[in-house]
Structure formats: structure tokens, C-alpha cells
Image (cartoon, rainbow, N blue to C red; front, side):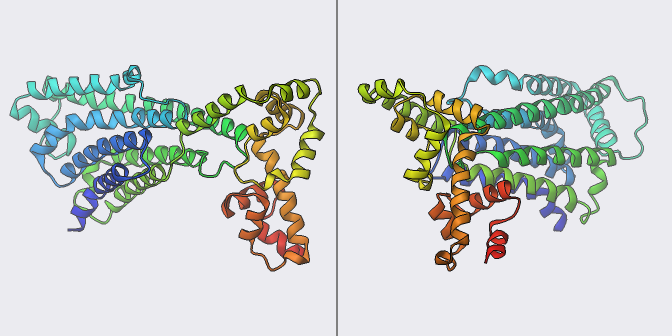
Amino acid sequence: MLHLILSIMPMFVCQFWVILLCMDHKQNLSKYYLALFLLVMGVNYFTHAAFFNRQYELFAFMDNIWVFTSLSAYPLYYYYIRLLTSDLKIDWRKSWILLPSLILLAFSFVVYFAMSPEELGIFIHGVMYHEPGYIKPYPPLVQLQVLRTVLFKVVFLIQLFISVYFSYHLVNRYNKELNEFYSNTGGKDLSHLKYLLLAFIFASVVSSISSVVGKEYFIDKGVLLIIPSFMHSLCLFFIGYVGYHQHFTIVDFTKDVNDFKTKELIVNTEKKRSTSKSKIIKEQLSNLLEKEELFKNPELRITDITYMLGTNRTYISNIVNEEMQTNFCDWVNSFRIDYAKKAMRDPEFENLSLLQIAEMSGFSSLSVFYRAFKAREGVAPGEFKSRKS
């Protein structure tokens, strides 16, 4: 029973998140696409379950589909990240990323249907399960299937590193753009996806080790099957968990930017003319935030300051980037942290919790406050407060 549960656990994790993603009331295109990805992965792990439960005939057929689902994993997840960071809708021209998996799928099925029952038995029992009694050299069609497994491993590794590299680049670029626009990026940025990409690599290492040892080694050792089963299930669970809670995407970001551009067209003309004559320097920007305490607004955007000064977003962004050597989010957070430090030193606020101090300083959540404070001050806010008390 334990063996059966472990063999099907990754598949059920996939189906669990497919159902939740499709039922989510905060639905968006990226979530539908992630549900498709997890559905494909569910088919992949169904094949694993057939293998580990010695369903020979079922596995012999599903092994061909497994080639496609395995080689589709990283390209599909890469395109999911594109839907989060750059693509407003699915561009079907990008379907070429599935070409290697489709080619190897066709090759595998052609050889599969050309094989006799005896050749298929040699491939399944001798090559895949490494059962004794099957002597090399194998028949030509079996050798073609062996060649397919070699090609699969080569293509799989190439796809892994290419997909992770470009996905990481997309996430970095997207996060940088968010930091230039919003003063609070909590719930918007995709830094957590970097850890998932590393988890992908780790899961692939586990799979590679399993392949070297031989997957058949785990069939009659239920306890050892816990290792690959748990690792893959955990990775799939966090993929689904992160995707389910990621409500903000490039669609929302683009909408905010376009809303600003629309409003910019109807900004008072006289105000624009008067302010365009004066040079806006960093002292004026800092004074504006300090005197008006704009930083206390957790939803403050660079466009809000742009409206007040009657200038354009690019100009303000350049001042923050070039003269202050930072980004908009970190710049605003510096005012918030300074205010929080003063509050933690003030006896009047000594009974306030860290959450209350974070909120009154303009942070959207305690976790965002903690990360920003520790990154700037080198200590956690709680430790800072205890030192000053």
C-alpha cells in the first residue's frame, strides 16, 4: 500500500492544483496556463506510477507520451513565466519551443508501432527494467529506442539550462521594472520564482541520480521510493502554491502604466508649462516626500509624484536612478525606514507592535517591512527596537 501511495503521490499533487487553479475566482490567463502545465505533469507522473507498479503494457504505451511530457516541462514553464512577466496573451508562434518534444514523440511512436511483441518485451524488460536474461546486442528497433533515451537525456539537459537561464532573466527584468514604478512591490514581484527555478534544477538532479541508480531499483523498496516521490511532490506542490497565490501579472502592470499615460494626456497644461521651466532636483523630491509624508501611502507610485510635479515619469525615474543611485521602491522605503526608526525610539509609541509601526510607516505588510529594514540596517526591526528601548 505504501508503495502504491508513494508512486501516485506526485500525480495527485498535480491534479489537486489543477482543480484549485481552474476554480479560483481570481482567475487570469497565467493561472489557466499553469493548470495546463500541471495537467501535462500529471500525465507524466501517471507514467511513473505505471512503471513503479509494473503495469508493463500500460507503461510500454505511456512511455512514448512520457517522452513528450518530460521534454515539454521546462519550455511550458518558461512560457508560463512569460505570461507573468512579458506576454499579455498567448502567442501561438512561440509553439516552436515544443518542437524537440514533438519530434522525439513522433520518433518514439514510429519505432514503438514498428516493434514486434518480442522486441517490445526486450525493450521494456531488458532495457527499462534491467531484468536479467536479455543479452546484447539488441535487435535494431530496440537499439533505436535506446538511442531515443540517449537523445532524450541530451535534449532534456539543454532545455533545463536554457529555460532556467531565460526565465531567470525575465524575472529579474520584470522585478526591476516594478521597483521603478511602485513603492511597495509586495504581492507583485516574482522573486520567489527564482527559488522555484533552483528547485527545478534540484529536482532534475534527483531524477538524474535516480536514472543512474536505475528507477527499477526503487520498485521493491518502498521506503527508498520516499526520496524521489517526496522531492518531486514537494516541488510540484510549491509550483502550484506559488502560482495559485500570484494574482498580479504583467497584465495588471500594463494596465497601471496605461492608466497613467491616459491621465498624463489630460494633466493641466498650464501646470505642465510652469513646472517644465524649473529643474526638478533630488532635494525637491525629498522635501516633497518629507513634508507631505507621501511615503505613508503604501500604494504610492512614481506616477503620483509625476502628477504633483507636472512632469513625466522618465524624468523622475532618471533622477532617482542616476542621482540617487537607487530605484523608486528602495528610495521611498528609505523614508519609511527612517520614520519607523524614529517611531521605535519615541517613548510615545513604545506600546505599538511592529505591525502597527510598519503600517503607520507606509509598508504594506510586516514581511515587506522586515525585509526592507534588515536589508538597509543590517538588523531585524525587532532587534533594533529592543536595542533602543
